[in-house]
Length: 375
Image (tube, one colour):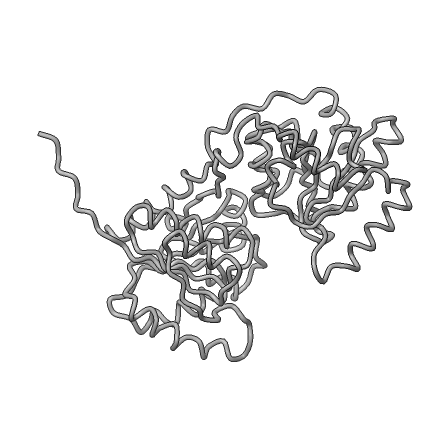
């Protein structure tokens, strides 16, 4: 006779994050909230709010507005309001995804009985120190990549690694289908908006308006390819941001100086990233500073589009595993040009993704919650 199924326990999980505007951690909050609701659990998010709140609530999660992210001398005054909310919610799990919320949770949980289990996720390569060390106090500490795990172990030798779990972020294969090609109508609209990008292979560098994303290296790459007789176009996707006008002007000056005004376009963030990537001959990841993960690497490869990037941090980790041909030593512009020319000529085949899927991340996170509750 088969063993009986264990009784279902409906969990209440509270995720803590400074705000819900945009970003990888914020997206993960929504994705785990969606998975909790789909599995019959109660999902609550506490933050200062933001443009993603309607999307969160539409998927069945609850949102409680509380400023738990603003760094000031008055931050400790928010411990009591947070404790009151947690006492009313009686959560099984409190999951902190940022340092200040983790500090506030650590103090707020001291006054609760029964005390919820504390989980933390380290989403970035935070500067080591006492302030960042709060993220190690979770009963389980999630690292979003092996790169983050190695960073934590290297800088915090006292860390109990049995509490550490690597759960990479993932993408929805339905949102980035293998071999996807944009529709003709989309292509007409895209090239009408960016006529300078037509007529040659498109290189796309996604990234916000900061020099850490390697925009200068991308411009110099196009200039050097042109000197070698290789005609390409470049889209700096997401570089135009409010408050970053001086940086955009700096990039435009470089583009003009290299004679590339007819080959390079700057753009704000777009909602049609899937089609932009699918239209690209190469997707670039040239961050000058190691990053914790590298979601755009996964998105592009899921679409069967080649990725060329600096082999450090999470980007290097993903390329080493999924597309070694796209790796270049960090900052080596000569090798970058050579590898770009090779990939534009003949890019090695790309296999469909077998992991780094959204469902994998959701399943592993919910399993970790159940593991804690089960004791």
